[in-house]
Length: 396
Image 1 (cartoon, rainbow, N blue to C red):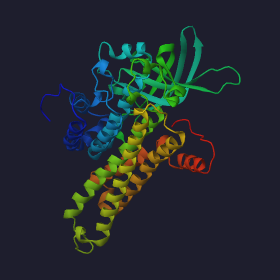
Image 2: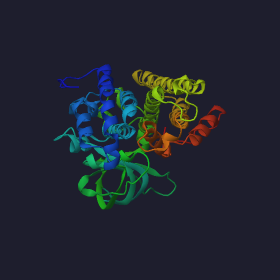
Image 3: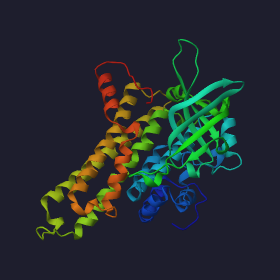
Image 4: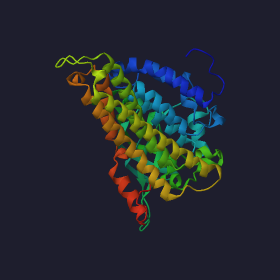
């Protein structure tokens, strides 16, 4: 991976870099789990290889590529380390979302240092009070992945509205000096993601450092004035949910890689038979590969379809957005079932922490717990829309 990375790479070049980095991340995975955050070397590699520039506006030195590149890279990185793929994806979604903020906010973060990263916790638990020029924000947010490497944070909450008006959910942008990180990340899976709590006590957030969720839903944000490219016209919800679902598919691909490698040399202590000669083991391998291939193809199709609307300057139909949202969560469910089957087929040795499939098993179950990855609610909404009901999910 040595070489000159100063020029803008192609999509294929970026994917190749991720494929070359994946085995390195696999070797670092145990250390990341011990640290309960990614090693600094991994963040440095993401910077060096240009991964953090992929969806950054060109006016700050970014590549301004279609955000589907994030998820192609996550698939490759996740084969090596799901925590690395997770942190990479969510931090890049924040880069993409900052381009939707007012230009003044973008300059505050990137003008002096365009390599600055942003972490987040979008759960709307913050308490906001209107004051002159903005809001006074307080609260405690959980699951701020990669926060140790970020100098700013996106935090979610509702702002007070007049009687009768619907709740106004917003993303608040705060500098590192305005919040405290609480080191409470002790988990069985995604240990390397460092998804710690963040506490804010009465910080002032000016108007230009707020982004309305409704603007993200309508595909019309203040930042589109200075960043008019179609790549910044996707609905925010579609980008966010894919950042937390794609690592599951990457982890499942990594589990399949580990399963095949492990089974090639395994000999049953009970029967003396070779695992690779087992009919059942071969069927599990084939079914796992087919299921994951199907999910990847569907997810890529969805992005291609969305971008075709954006290129034509058209709105993405709500009924299609509903389906895409359901597909994102369903992919996690399918990937989790694949890993469970691979894990069980490996036998009792898979229960040991150092077994190559065990880490993927623990990580994917942590990924599945994310609110956006529960399949039932988006599936019920999708099915309702198919029956002619109105959409009930505005995070699409």
